[in-house]
Figure 1 (tube, one colour):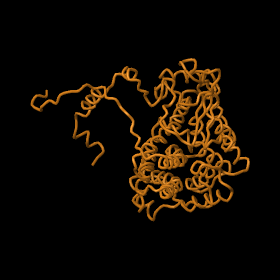
Figure 2: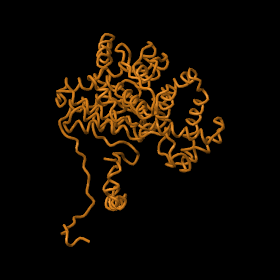
Figure 3: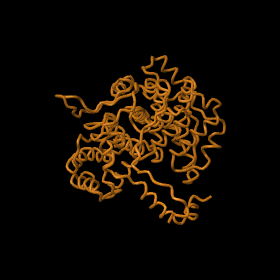
Figure 4: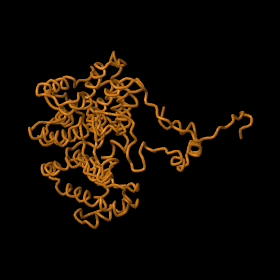
Length: 455
């Protein structure tokens, strides 16, 4: 059946859409009347407390003279400042994804022997069922890698005889398997799309179980399987910084909600993927890249501060790019003065730009990072500070690593599957109650009207 058949079968689809809109709208004033905190946030933008977690935390304000005031952002993994984690493995010239994953999953940093065992476990787990690539990944390729990734995850359930076993050892086994194969599912799906839909050559390389997650990603993606040490280090850093975020983000909350229903691991992770796919969550760095492409098209001199500032004002006035009134990559739901993830990524951007010969483009990003908050503060009433967020630089990093745009959000998922796994395990360990929020009906009772009396 053609995807547009429903439009032919139902020529009154626009009329039905109008009917849906007419009878589904709710008066915005009712949200205030009934004290509904829309988006699970209060008037100051703070999240409504919906649970407890040991996994991660965000600090964006401190108490001073009895009032909460914004401060530079801090991200804690299991109570440890992520900046210290990064400094630790970089100082010892190691990649950090596997070490940080161990920390989030098991609650403490691994010893050298424990880390080696964990890396070996993930390395040997980087394999898909026989003919899975041929029978699943290469069938119905699409540019939408997140949908393809979700389909792959759900299909893996049919290969698991214990798919619905919710015992802790079994769920942990499933989570570790998904952490190991996410890079394969993502990159192989891209290669299938790039070949069948774009007409380019297809490369299906086997992973090397002795290499890290970041190294394997670059190896699987590139025709010659080659990469530099700096490229692997920067990609590894990006994965560490995207691995988890405060326990209150949309996809982690989705993981808790779906886990609480008693469903299986594969369905839970597919739901988390659906959440992350949204442009308000994991797809934000793509919007940053598209915005900068539009900026370059309309501003000829990238060093002209007045011209760049004028473009940013046009963005806010809904006169440029997608006319949504947003400067993408600026501002965050929690952070105000700074996003520590953006700061750490930025610290490596210049080095990578030198290796790639992209210093001029990087300077444009630095300029927008400086001017953006000024323009937003000038034009909008901001109750807290505004700064560049992690999406501002992650898209640039992926671009300099020659990652295709289609893989930007899957890269986020490859990292965040660790956080989702930790949250799924935490939910299973600590509660057996289904998460069931309350919605208040604002519609009065209505009588049933017999068919003969309906107009």
